[in-house]
Image (cartoon, rainbow over all chains, first blue to last red; front, side):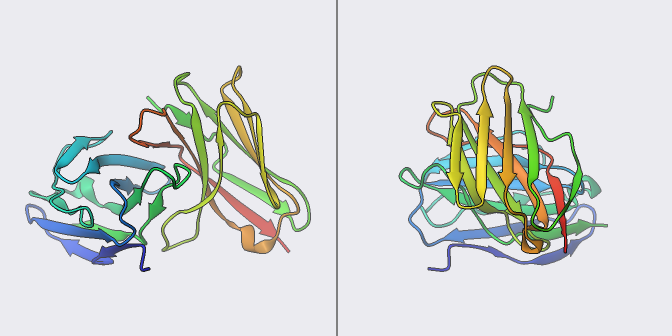
Length: 113
Length: 113
């Protein structure tokens, strides 16, 4: 099992550009999450999904969009990149029976210049 | 409003001694807590958890204590090893079925050989 896979690992965007951060998991988890981590800060929840077709906002959703068309994939979309979105983004997943623990991907480091 | 707080940004401990990492929370509805360890350029990895029906959970060298009246939990690592040097995050959730965790800002532990 690969677990949670995120692509790309690194990306530099210009202000106003858009991009999609990809996240896929092969554990058949129904719950998926996007977090961002700013330097010296904890992880902030952006969006989450409790199953295919269902998404909801987290703590810091502004400037982002998500979709969940399949159980495996949970892409995060930045429409108009801003310097404030420079961060490391982590995708995570879990399921009932996993003792409530989240499994994280290795992250995407994004810089908006 | 930071619902989960880790007030010590860093901690240095001698190898073989005890490391104590602290976490405070403000939301009395939180009833499940996790600790994660994070190495640079990697995603967080699960360490240990505790539910509000317990006040202690042990796993090898790692023990988590929960004091519900004080809204405080702590992670004890005994004995500390150089490989334990990492950033440690605590996270809290309400058992609503979404596993939507709120993370603290992290404590960087350095174990000195």
